[in-house]
Length: 287
Image 1: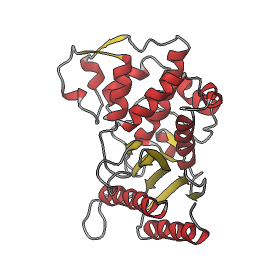
Image 2: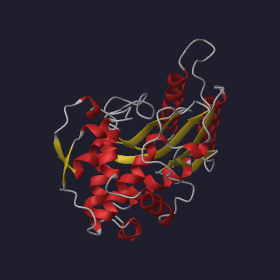
Image 3: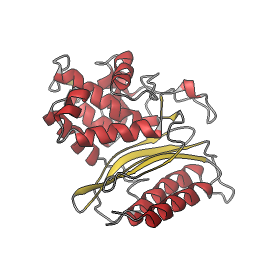
């Protein structure tokens, strides 16, 4: 158990990291060993970018659980899927490849591939995913678009994109984690134990290792999903230590300038800030 003084020092360090930058940083953090939480703007609406895909995955798995989707359904990669897509590798591949819906979900998560996202979203209605979020308690998450428009300006309005809150994403990750052992949580999510295990493992398989894992010891297991937005960078995940969940961190930067005063790209400092927040938790929450 962390001592009150240690908890206070972690909170102070997190505030210092955020205050050192000219942009907005919001976060929700939970020490899973003690249940202590530290928050900053955790309920503020913020662009979700690709962190939204965790809830898309869970909505798809619920539909599969109910028999409305078949995870083994073959999907053919067509050239149209690559239109207006700016993430992932499928857009560079030759059309005609056939993968399963399960593999499309995996690609959507571990490489944030938006060709795969389109494949998944062709089998789910936007309203269904948004309604699913509300049904499990993510009242601050609003799915508005299948794929965000590429031509968005850096100062776009919130209603131009899907939005969420740092708290919502932390809560969702907590539910996915708890569902590994709790039938009550699995019932709330509407997903079987097997599919909940798949969801957690898919988050652990994340290939993009910036932000939350970037300053942690090599090989640290992190079940997470990041996002790249026009207004900032974001990342939400579960960090493991010695094989056990240690803390959940959901962090969102916003109003990030294209270039910092010293010439550093703004996105570099946004990702670095999230990495520093995670490292402060790693050091401060050590047993």
